[in-house]
Length: 194
Image (cartoon, rainbow, N blue to C red; front, side, top):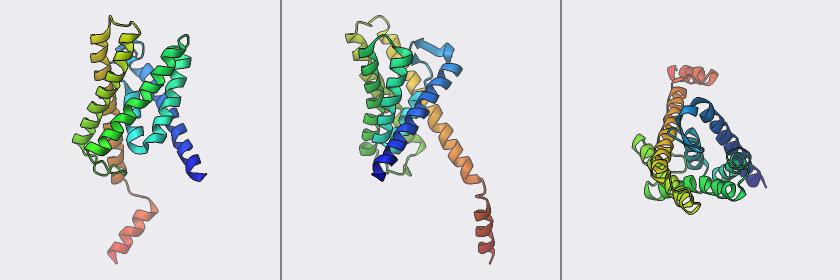
């Protein structure tokens, strides 16, 4: 039961972070929207990728929930089918990229071997998977006019948003390593001097 509650906690946390990133993206990058839901810089792509890289399936479930909330109540409130499909595609793409990265790049569960190059590869693969999943849906829904430009915009937005979030987190982690750990760091220094 603890495992289920723990996984539910991470799914909920991922959903909240995803929705928060959507709000920040709407606020900061409003002028970079290609069409509704496709941006030239898309920070939620980074949250999707980081969440699934760190948490796997619980993050994908959280992304599904968060995407459905965004689709049903904000992006497409009058289109149930598009909202349902949009949430599924938005959660499936980062999970598929995560599964690929674990297998092809041999990523460890703690991501200790996630180098700068592998971050770029993960971002590009995720963007390609996400864009490739969404655009056939757009085609079959009759939204053909903006397909080529939409493909480029979505791919670019997913890569830039992913890299922005990934490198921001990498910078924060690096800075935290430089900070003293409080009383524990003092005790370690004192013991090392003895």
